[in-house]
Length: 179
Image 1 (cartoon, rainbow, N blue to C red):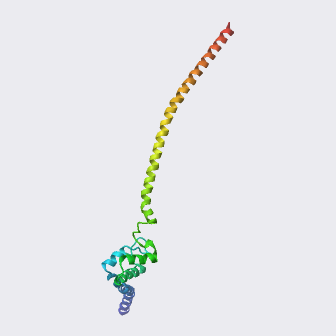
Image 2 (image 1 turned 180 degrees about the vertical axis):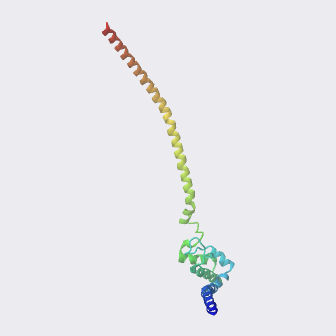
Image 3 (image 1 turned 90 degrees about the horizontal axis):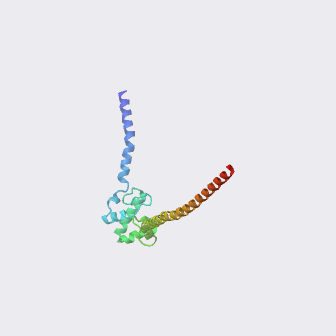
């Protein structure tokens, strides 16, 4: 009975640790060696290129298979005597300008760099125009109000005189009627 329990325990341990050992062996043989052999120049260039799969990561930081292949290609191209600009152009030709972590500051991309500055300037101009117009608009009604108040005083005086005449006429008619 003890032997069967010990055999069962050993079998369970083997089943538990066998997948862990296989995964550890795969990690050791999974082509990490070429990544470690990258020259400082290749690592610097790998940091300047975006990974097409991993959003926001450079091919230096990404663990995707494509990024590994791209790092290997960068190192091979350096070993073959290509310059940094030629290697960048190689990747731009294949993946587009979006592969660069810092797109060139010319052409359409210059617009992308200056658009926020232009937007703030236009916003400040519109705000200044709005405030100036608002001040002019609030200043006008006061002078218009004075003009209207002068007209309304004249109208009020005229109305008051009519009311007084009507009252006098009524008083006269009442006096005439009482006599």
